[in-house]
Length: 181
Image (tube, rainbow, N blue to C red; front, side):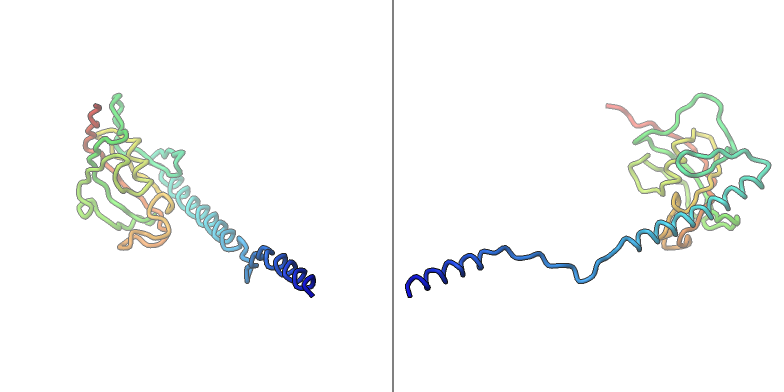
């Protein structure tokens, strides 16, 4: 009887020491939402690119440059002299306006007022931030930004809606270089 009790205790101890099995998920999620989102964004980007390219093609008065950063621009006033462009920390004083691709004004220069921007140290939508880096003091440039370079999916929560490509005419007044220590 004693042997049966010891044998039972050993068997219970072995069974009790079994590691628990991992729980299986109730449902298996696939990447279908992400795949659909990628396809939707590709389609949106292609549509916006087509609209912007048609604007560029129909504007025979200006010569547009395609930026490697994903937007188009043309110089309204170009400074040929070898002057500085803004670098990290430089203060850029500029004016700009915002229109949709139909040319409807969203924000006037007066509404936006003169801006002073510490390069790459303050919030500014990515297209404008990248565009300012191309400019010299005294230049005026018209930028055509697809929505992903403007306010993207969320808009600006005021006048710019979801996925709206923009036209911005920007004038850099001054560039104050950051003092190096």
